[in-house]
Length: 106
Length: 106
Length: 106
Length: 106
Picture 1 (spheres, rainbow over the protein chains, first blue to last red):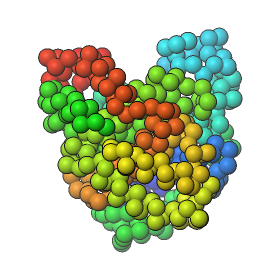
Picture 2: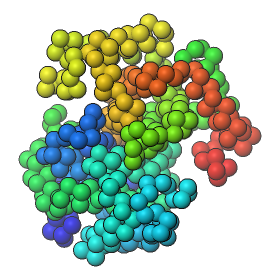
Picture 3: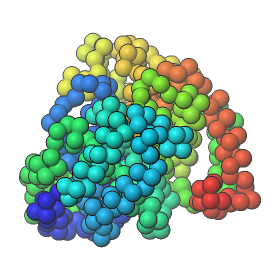
């Protein structure tokens, strides 16, 4: 996200004094809760869903992820690149291409 | 995230032909599954957790969110700003300050 | 479940002194975590799944539900019947028949 | 649960022709969604929660677990006892007593 968007998320929390609720554990719960509101858009059908609702719920997940990055003093680019290093090693192209099998069964 | 990080996520998927598995419903499931691997870091304690493990699981959630943005042709800044418009209206500072109460009970 | 099965679950917890970890919040996290291990069986396909794995993960969810009932001094039949009273009122047969629409849109 | 309670759950589904929506994958999603409505009761506090709300959400999880047992032709006692055999072997009392450590680190 752009720095202005990240700043807007931070300011929203600060203006409401909500940092006090943003423990890592509470934010982990919140990410799961919002992820399941997103999942609810697909509860009974994989194909028919409310696009506007999906956008809102996905945004909620992203906002809580940013809150957790902030709470833990982390940078999205840094942790994602570290994880992609591992994913690329765990799923070599020649083995994983076109397969949905988990790395420990490749 | 920076464009290079987003490109790396996209290239990882494309190189493995994994777009075929990335239906919106499958990605919604994946975000919830990874969110719960993150939650598992806090299953029995809110205070004691494995920081490196938390970083990895949070990165996994962020990567699947980016996959879903890509699958649906969405931009993180756009949907987050649209959602923040709504959040700011739902939780006015004067009412929400210091309170963890849900908007419909404010 | 039969009383012997419920007793076996209780004895398992007691023998290991695990009641100390079974706060309602920790058990709510645990139910969600196990529910997502169950969901993972269907991450990339709705039709192809490992039946033995599904049985194990569903059992894990049921065990943590029993732990939560025990922790809160609740009886499954009682709370389920109370909830079914509400569900039957919210989803009248003539309106809900054959429809997956949520009650507030019926 | 008592046979009458299980029959009530089954009749509720049948009367509404909802079996058509109860694929194993959809029920796995539903269990996770309800588990997270239960988790939401503890989103910002582990100690202060709405007991009546907790009872309802826990009942919802249990009802969807019964729906999944029915869909897959499974018996709760059978799969729970099979899983408890494994749990007892994975977590021997002498090693696991008083410890919240996962079996692969015991």
